[in-house]
Image 1 (cartoon, one colour):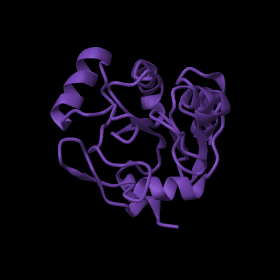
Image 2 (tube, one colour):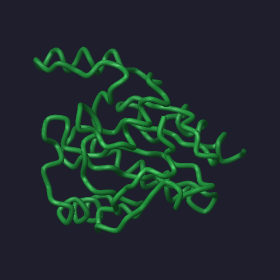
Image 3 (tube, helix red, strand yellow):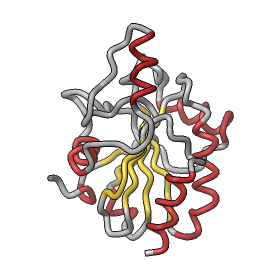
Length: 181
């Protein structure tokens, strides 16, 4: 498995980054989209970030257009949407694939580290099937707003289903447990 800390990343403003630049922090990596039924989760993600950032926590948002073309915008449009509608101040990264053969290396490594997700996946899959859509199977990312939790030591310690909101007690407890280490 690739060393998560050394995988090259690009911020939404074009600046280079790696997870090594966030070393020693608890990270919540989320694939995000602006035109998804789950988009209001941006509000909860920003609240999590504001609540815990002074304790060494960051939300890292990775826009992806993989699911229903729900992130069609340019980088500038994504930033404007996030700031105007949700006051997003956590780091956003360049739009890139999180599933399929062209998935970005970070997501390939995250999926390899934790192939299954916590939370209600089956009802979401059934809803997709009801709309005539074929949902991704594990280990692939199911949909927008799937969440990976990385501990201070750089280890992927959890993976949470897209429908699990940022306020979900299980997710909050997992973040608090990692911050306490």
